[in-house]
Length: 471
Image 1 (cartoon, rainbow, N blue to C red):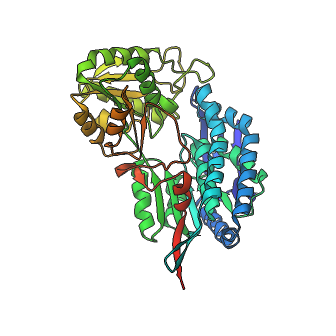
Image 2: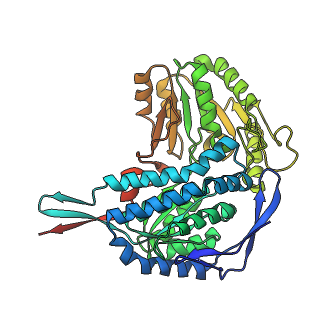
Image 3: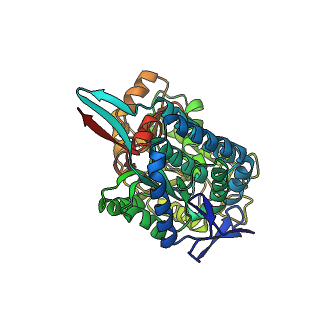
């Protein structure tokens, strides 16, 4: 049983003033594996004070000093990959291939921040003005449970590269992963107060960060509902805000698509991270002229997806992170049938061979109308909807008929046609015949999928404001 009793403030391990214990679970078994002691408002205030005190010194560091610090951070995260991998499988129950990627991802995002920092122009000349990109101050970084270490390291690396100091509020559901990341950050010997990690409830620690006048910036990844609350809180003190929120991403299979290539990509896009991904392509748009063919191929592919034990190398979809999330997914599967959608694969209940834990049967619906709740609301589980369209124009209209606009995927044999369709989709990122991630490109959403961008030059600039000096 794990007992996580400390947080990190001002470069030191500190026992929280909060006394609440939160149970940690293994999603594959449903068993309690430990507890984490949660921080309270007083802990959050101490962390903010430490970050504020560290800001004047850190903001004046040179590019080379920041690069050196980020390189130590990267090397420390690389060294802890075996422990992090074990924690991811135990605490999040990601399948082996996904867990391995998640354990390495923190190193990748720190490396991307280093590269962005090396190329970043902090000063430029515009007419008689010298424009200086200036760090904002203390950044509050609020991260989710579906890629704990990656989100902590990505946001923190960008903030530090920009010259900000930070208070991180990670999900309490990922406390074991967070503890390993925090140990690594201590190994990196960053100056005291430059980073502070305070594990607590969103309505306590997150609320404090989003309201506190000394926090100049909030970067949040999570639900759209929470993002709205943060935005309202931040408005009181004119905080700069980056929000990476939910999605209901479309995958458009064009009429000329080779289904042998398109279907595997569509299934991978829909079931990535066991469906617990804001970018998951859960609406699959297929041409009416090939409806039967597409549905048959998709149903066969979904039925073949193995769900369940994360230790089994053949598993592609792991269990949901919590019983609450499992119940949510089950309720949407029932709702889809109540709305009149036709079940092609999967359905309610646990995956075959799984008597314990929170595994889900990978599910595919057809006869879905874009007005149905299963097509409009983010389920955050392995549940896909097939929607038919008549021509490219209608496919684009359906793809854009959503409150969200985070990600999209276009699949077709004619690259020029696929690019034309991609160019008309309202989403922060549109992939064409690939699921590749470009770390130097901006990432974020339109509409209810968020505000601002992360990654690359844009991610660093989001922690700064331009100052014009005219002489």
